[in-house]
Amino acid sequence: MQKNKMPVPTEAQEQMTLFSWAAMQSGKYPELNLLYHVPNGGSRHKAEAGRLRAEGVKAGVPDLYLPVARGQYHGLYIELKRQRGGRISEEQVRWIDGLLEQGYAAAICKGWQEAASVIIDYLQRKTEG
Image (cartoon, rainbow, N blue to C red; front, side, top):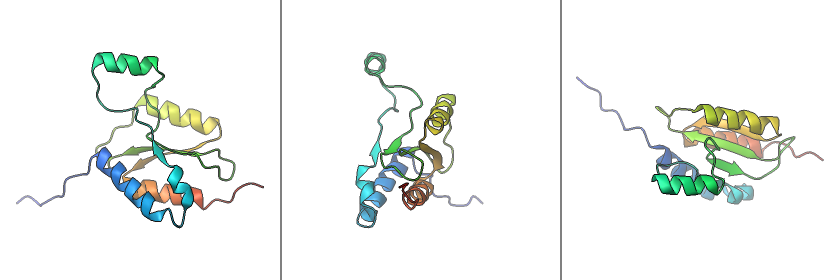
């Protein structure tokens, strides 16, 4: 007998849920209005992919950016993956490592809830001053 398992939400569904959550939390954390998606991923035709590369699109750039300084960090980058089954590429790891070296907070999160928790923890840090 097979158990009824709910399907794992796609990365896009996780991201849409995170942005819905952020909109609902923006009264308490107005900085969430600055959270945005970096549309670097997705499958594209060769010609479009080539044009985007020429325009500066780079593989591995994290999905989300919150341009809000907290503590010693200039801002927060998040690579959002599915709760199960998302693969982290070498380029993504290199970007996360490079951003950390440059004074940004950066995280790889599985699912919107983990990302929301990372964002709240980040926003609750004290600002330097």
